[in-house]
Length: 191
Image (cartoon, rainbow, N blue to C red):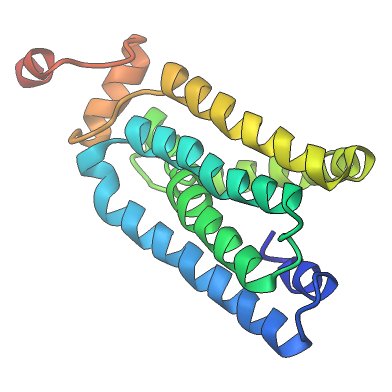
């Protein structure tokens, strides 16, 4: 979204200067979401942050759907605001989480690393089919699709993810290798 947001904003009637400023705002707000996540993820846990990141992403998408229905979607400040909010919530909260899981399940205890490479591999591989789908179903149906998918993704992430709040990498690696989804307080204290 950030990569082509200046083009989208120009297509909606923004001047090239407003489109560039809008893109800068979107990127800065998204970065703020990353910073918030970095400081809160160990206390709140990946499961809760991921759930909030996906479910709250439905709010700006719902606003854009409503704006489309009411023919207000051509107002660039509205689109800048909603793209920014989406970036803060989805990219900041959920996007940041994707760079840490490899450390949670490996014995190397090194954060980052391969998870970044795997994420980029799948991101680029999925971009073309997704953009092709959006082109085929149109803007309104793309917004509806995104709204439904962030809700579904949040539920799936919550059901399938490991809770890592307040645990060391070693505790998380033990939890994953044992096959347990959650180590209760008593179990954590005993290990």
